[in-house]
Amino acid sequence: MKEISIQVIKRLPRYYRFLSDLESQGIEKISSTKLAAVMSSTASQVRQDLNCFGGFGQQGYGYTVSNLKSEIGKILGLQNVHPAVLLGAGNLGRAIATHMNFESLGFKLKAIFEKDTKIIGTYLRGIKVLSDEDIEAFFAENEADTAFLTLPKDSVEPLIDRLYALGVRNFWNFSHFDIAKKYPDTVVENVHMTDSLMTLCYRINDKEKQPDDANS
Image (cartoon, rainbow, N blue to C red; front, side):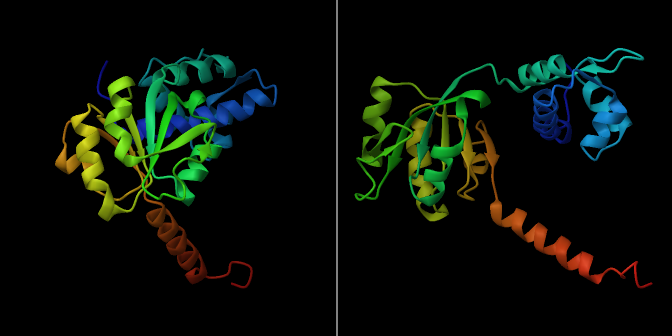
């Protein structure tokens, strides 16, 4: 398969999400024009993105919603089950463990680790929170190829070193630590919520600077 740009790949979850909504509404087929309208995109962008993977549509018919959703799910690998561990059971970690439907997104949460003695021994998602000192003991009897990191940047590097030594190469990283710089062979998806919030702030400020069309 030809190399697909990261911009296209990052749009695939949006397609999947919007197609899931359309399917739940009982919509069976949709044109690229209507799909683009739902997604606030353009028909040409939709066709270009989907043509990177074969197209999936029929001339004059459009796309079968359930089939397109299924195919995009396969492209994303949602049918796979990657065993994962969560490091950090504070507020963010608890929210993620409680509310994320990992199984429908290609992952299976196997263990949760924390250093706070007040949290160790409690349960999240029916999983007992273990001490981060037990990471090696867990991996001695279990397998996991992915780690979700909801830890402060200044405390995460030693844990990453330990996980890497145990064979973990995939990271969903909320910590802001640059994992890929230290370990170039890892697959890392960085989540910077502060960046997103600052972008929102900019857009609000930018909109406030625009002339009021109603009064112009």
